[in-house]
Amino acid sequence: MHDIQQARHIPVALNRCIDLLAPAIEKAIELRGVAVIIDATLGLGGHTRALLERFPQATVIGFDRDLDAIEIARKNVAPFGERLTIVHRVYDQIPEVLAERGIEMIDGALFDLGVSSMQLDVADRGFAYSQDAPLDMRMDQSQGLTAKEILFSYDRNSLIHILRAYGDEKFAPRIADNIIAARDSNQLESTKQLADLVKESIPAPARRTGGNPAKRTFQALRIEVNQELATLESAIPAAMEALVPGGRIVVMAYQSLEDKIVKNFFTKACTSTTPRGLPVELPNTAAKFSYVITGSESATEVEIEENPRAQSMRLRAIERVAA
Ligand SMILES: C[S@@+](CC[C@H](N)C(=O)[O-])C[C@H]1O[C@@H](n2cnc3c(N)ncnc32)[C@H](O)[C@@H]1O
Image (cartoon, rainbow, N blue to C red; front, side, top):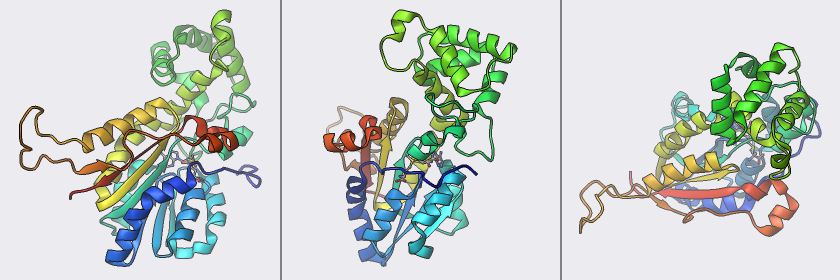
């Protein structure tokens, strides 16, 4: 375990997320006396706590793959007892977790994607290029390949692929070559060594724009280490499928690759499958979902000033309208 006692995380768009889920929760409580919500990214429990406070008849199943986060969340939400079930699982296992608990349908789902401030702040997790630490970057430190294991075992083409696909890195071949040279001479042990290597791989004029040059490489590695896009690709449709009619799903994404995945699923689900140009909608082709937010929303200026993490956030929400 790490030194997580002082760990903090300011929940992003807290009231807005709860307001977006509220009609689904109120409807469920009116119909069945309870509401079941999935918090797919429990983190330190900020959103879940607010939800349980506002709706005394709501219960939450909170997923997190990070044991440090779970330890803190347990303390933060202890007063709510059995109304919260915490599961140490990846959120692509939503169907399995619901089946294990005999839950057929849910009333709402919240995804607050990416890493928490706690994960970035605890230096030895290896997420931050600004702090020197071992190259780990696993959200779940109990399993999977570390960033170092990936850097040492992937061939040149695979390294170039992840840097390009997940980091949009123009200088991927130079960085990959330098990674291979550094690992061959055992000069690649820490986040600082990697950040310096990336900086040296990028020509000086290109270094002057776009912030820290290591940012793209760190993002790419983190996505690969945690298989972030693949898990999201299966979790979003699974959560949508589990919703009752009237149920809602709310997602906050902080980088464009994740937001694009969410946008594509939501657009498809909110669009009739009747071929364009037909004068009437064919039977069984009506969209099963409708937009609660048309397009996406950003955080407010005030929030961004208080919490810089909110800057890149894109919020999307849809409601299930048919079984
Ligand atoms: C941005 S934080 C959530 C913060 C939370 N909403 C709060 O208010 O405290 C994201 C959390 O989701 C977890 N996480 C990210 N991807 C995950 C996945 N695929 N499965 C389970 N948990 C995941 C991370 O470990 C992190 O704790």
